[in-house]
Length: 637
Image (tube, rainbow, N blue to C red; front, side, top):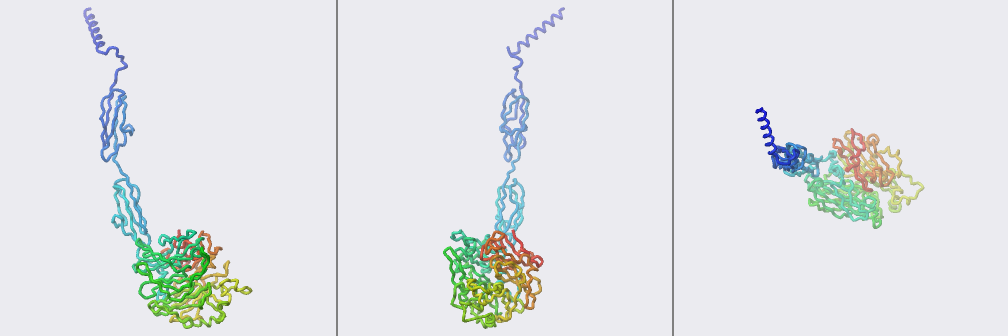
């Protein structure tokens, strides 16, 4: 009994003590719980607190601070907020993450004229990048803008980099055929030697702006330019007579009837120099040839023009002055001296070469139409001017150097008493060239006229129906493509000639009975040791044609055009107007024999016409590609 009493007393005492230790009136549900926040920082930074014990519901702000070279990338809970606000309602662990900063930089690699580069772009810091410079054909790499000279090099990216590659044109190397002996004295061969593969590509030959109502320009044609090296430094120079572009895009026929002379030293280099001069020609030159006329070892330029051609200008039609043949002696500073070497004359073409085998350069040409009556015997007459050796020219006596000339005139009805009213006995031609075709070491003379016009039946028609061509109506004689064989000492016998037959022309549907031979070139296409004749022209500016005469080696020729050329004749149907390509009719004038595709054989490059401006085969147009001896017209991009 005593033990039971003692237990009850002790129990009552303990209960009363527990109740006395709690705050009075505190309900059990309001007891505050404590939570632990653990904060850490990954590599590359620190945090503003490492955490602690906090009452439930406490908001704690944590800031992550990256070290140098690092950036904050986010928290372990997925948040990227910085600072991060954490509301504690449980024990929480959070880590700040950092990453190494990787900078991105731009590598800009550029190329100067004459090449291309690779390797530019955006790269991360520390990246090793290979950059490469590649020169274009005819150019060489000269170095990077920072002084390095390796074609390929490695650059380690550490900042934005801007670097350029420089290129320079290689000294000129001709891609024309090599000729031998006396043929190397011929002006057209010299012009072909310097031919670079294009002509009025405006990357190099910038047209000169002129104040035309049409907003037209002065532009060039293949006939009106010549490349050469007048400063003898191994780099090509340019001499050009730029023709005024008319309202319809024609050259000089509906413009200002004016031209400009443009000279460019070292035209394909970065150190070129340009000079522009006024010009005496209102009509485009008939042709420009290159030769050393005064024997000083430096090539010069000879210019001839049918300058009295009718020119339709904005101020009305007019005829220009009849001008002499002129030689331009160009100085190193781009200036020049002009020597007039003939009487005023009207050649449609001219040839130069060592006609009399005395070691200097002579000239030969035919007088063309006088569009206005003149006071001298010029039309349809051949002329030879012999060089004394220092650029002094003397007109050769016609009957002494053109043997049997009078006899031929008489045979075709020459009437010397009836010259202007009823022109008789003229020998007209449109193109002329010189070449040794029978391998005797003597230059022969090749002329191209219009055999169809000569064969036209004028019966029953008045000569006046043909305008200034009426003089052909009265027994004027126009050969097609004819070779007068050189006799030596600069002489030609007009009874010693060979015609180059044209067997395909009769099959063509001509809009006009005219086939103007405008250009003559030479190539031994079958490698038999005898050079063949390649001629070009136009059916009265309605299109163009190519004609190849095989040299049989016995003073006879054979027409092989159809066998060797795919598109040898085209008639566009518009005289000088747009053709199917959307540009002016090409109307081939002169030709260049040149390795256009650089495959080791020689292609045929036709020029455009002066009648209308076209882009030309050297700048995205066509040429005749030599494919194992067959010539296919191909287009360049």
